Length: 249
Image (tube, rainbow, N blue to C red; front, side, top):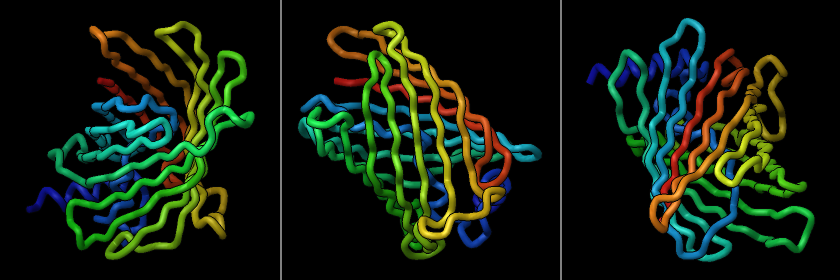
């Protein structure tokens, strides 16, 4: 299968990940989307995601994803996500299966709400190992503006995925301008090992404007969001586009 090596080389050029991680779950990070842990008990969600990385001198790399989520109760949300990967000069191939669980620990008792997020990513080729992402997710509101800040640890196990625990973060500002249209900003970053941060030039920080919206379809609702992020991806200059559409039923 000659397509797979060409695809991996293209991805490595974009993400600037050491070759020892090629083929592991580090290449199959399921989207850059801010985790929020508010749920509607009993509601199901079909989740369509799409994100890209554009780096100078490299082909545009794209990750389409599809998920099925379930709000088990008022505190627990779970979702299974299939993630594909492709570049402008290579075919689309399944990259990983992912299982996300978010548990809300507080519900208005404090000035902020706290959830625990966990995500297990298993690549298509099981011998490549898997990764576990976990950590706290914070959310609060100031007037009509929602603020989120999340700190996640990522640990690789087995195969190419094995590496020290990494530290990542997410943030979001979302202003409820109109019932069907919100605007704001998002940011993401990776700083290296959780207990020994990489030099500043090797860290990755991205931020940019974001739009959010929703519309009704009968008794159900579609929600959408999109953001364009400027900055670095794994230490190399690379802008990102993220988009997401959810159908709740």
